Length: 198
Image 1 (cartoon, rainbow, N blue to C red):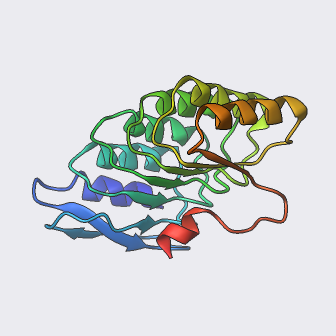
Image 2: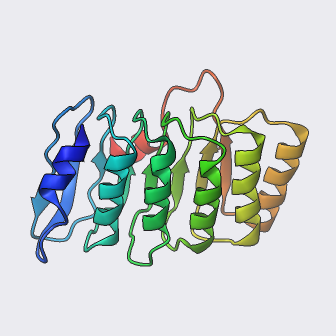
């Protein structure tokens, strides 16, 4: 898993920055750490990242890191989302695209994410496809987006698309025309972040 790796890596040195990485189905990943600033993407799918691993990723994002695109799809993140949200709240977090496709995120964790969206200053694309967020989780996210018109431009959710949810989504779109809310249907197999990280 990534846990031991992040413990070994720690936070990059004053001159080092995470540049780029694509490690699908990896058990022992090693990032490319470069001295020059870069906004290249990082894909960490199927890497067995759990709550503990998210803690180290969060520390990295809160440090001197120029990473703008991160895809951690298909990892058992669950409550580890809390740590990623802590990073999103920090003004020095530069993430513009975050892929959380199929990460076992729960309705409870959506409260943390909603709080992060209220303060985040950079995130433009958030993919939560293939997560069972429930009506309460989706409601929490949409309520946050109604309160603040931040930089977010694209949000993908898996929801039942009930009348209540549809009304809330429409209200969000009316108040924030730049935001597109996409519904992840059962037949959808492609993460939004694939378009950014391919």
